[in-house]
Length: 114
Length: 112
Image (spheres, rainbow over the protein chains, first blue to last red):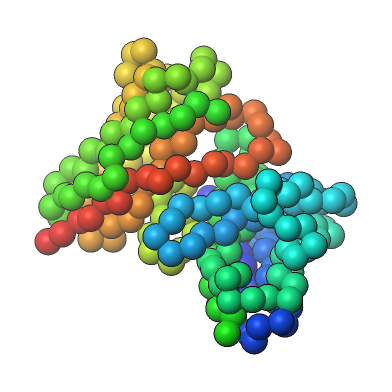
């Protein structure tokens, strides 16, 4: 299947700093990528849909000024958590669809805010 | 997208078949059944999908009832590595710009 990578795999930061997470489709182009967040023992929650060359679409309750998404190319989307706080600590997962049928996921990024 | 209902957890002995049920009684005619799994601290992994015919690949088999109101994912010979949360998702396949929405899934525990 198609491969989606994320970097970094884990990050620890101080409260108030910003953290950037990269999501890349390695062997296909993706005009649309998706960002999810997962808290411990919970399911994945869709945060936003990232569209290449245009603004991201955020789900209800997700602060667009706090979670900045940039989809500058067909293989790269970035999620920046601005002014991170301990409650932003979570597992962030991106995904992309190379075809209409299948959606592939990255390995996830574990964010810990101290 | 139609709602799905899955058992919260299931146990399976290593080497035996794991049969994971999913109810989707409100499924529409153009909606597919997808199965994904998530091993602890990893991203979800695609397993299989189908519309109305039974499907099989190297990972699993998908059995869909004739009325399409329920399905069963079958892992023919479960191993310890199959311990994961399994998600059954129903959606229209041609929604290229629409994300998968995850429910709570079934936690499958495979033991030796």
